[in-house]
Length: 605
Image (cartoon, rainbow, N blue to C red; front, side, top):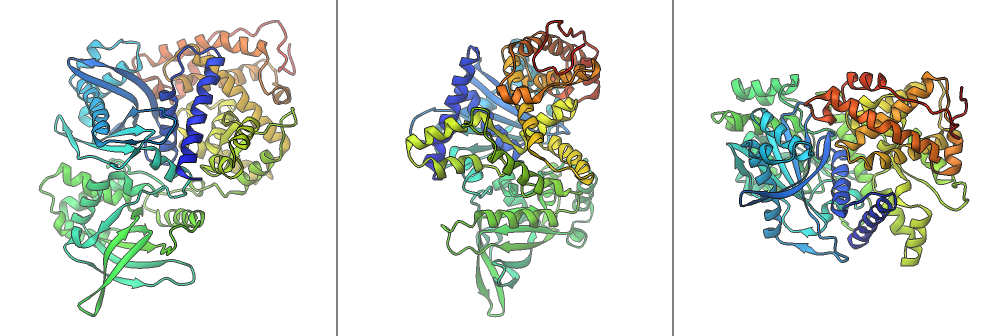
């Protein structure tokens, strides 16, 4: 799939989502909000931002300044903050966006941040709005925030991927761009790492001496060398987390044991850092070498650089130096192994093989903080079995299908491969619309919501996914393997969740997804409490919920939301939803099961 085709698919899916919400009765489904939601969801799943991300839209004036915010994400320790601001065109054709326009959008977000820090926004914003909650949160936690990033999200092509850093109240703010081309490269092109080219002569003053092993039958070459603390500081300062996009985890707070040790060594024993540290593992698309003094080989250029292990080390050097200005990073050296994929034909479609290799390198190299095999699971037999069953399963109409997206971007690839003409693409999307696409993390969300684990789902897609796989692993030890009936029940749970989400959408609640999850969990809990089982086969056959069940959910939804708000008090609802007490509070509410029969209930007494 080429970029233009990908752009057309994304645009069509956003239009379909908006049309669907209009049909469901939603008054103002904005295309820009759907666009931001799609981008942020990808960034969350790929580890570019934190799992606890929220859509939060506001645009207005603060004095003479224009302010705008489209979403945000806090790290688990609340010491890192990402802010998202949209520059959405919605045009029919691919367009470029100027640096001036991008910076104008970034500046609107910076004005929101500044107004929040100063406490001005919390005084003027409507107290019931999500933007007011965010402004208060920034105001109250700003002193403890160590990293702030502002992402401009756009459906156009940008030649500029990041700007010079800005400073607000003596804190550095990184400015980055997430454009349609970057999303395409991550999702379809198979290269979730940015094209980072590092001229080692420019960075280090000369080519970097190394021990080099040329490419063999396995198709890769590698070099052993050492980066100075200054080099790593420069790289992180220049590229930020774009350096770490192939890593299986993002930078962890210095409060964690390993990072505290790194920080202490940097402060008190910088000359021993190389002896104590396990080193860094990086991958590159290409490595340019040259002879040094006829005896040594030196690295002159690295293309497509990504650190797959050592993100903690790299970011710790950067943040520690920023915090302690007198830190002697000129004494710091870090061992590094550079693996070069050495693909001479850049057009050759070997991306899947490359990314599988990178994933395995990342998994095997990351040992400072334990990572389970569940972090890299797209090829797990469980997912392959679910994919196979779903792909061969027709809906009751005998025509349409659901789609299980085992590998990220595979839905778009399918549309590009089989929708070779406008007519074929339209027919394919009618047969298999994006509303019937289920990703791995979607499956985990639907499953755990029905399993009465809403507080786990609220912790974010990745943590919930790991919890889900842990449960599946235990079942597999007992001989479980997904079959046709199990898959149909999962799709029925998806239908239930999606319908519940539409019902909650009408309430215009904050943290909609958490209210939806709690409502689904509550239904499951109350049915079990009353010895009622649900007929998932009926939901599958109908591919919808009965009007009676929808009515029941509509009756319960306001009480669930009210209970969550009362229990959370002044807390951010998305944070309170992670607390077990929140789930216990919701269970204690008053929910009446009507006397009139509900078709989906198998036993009713």
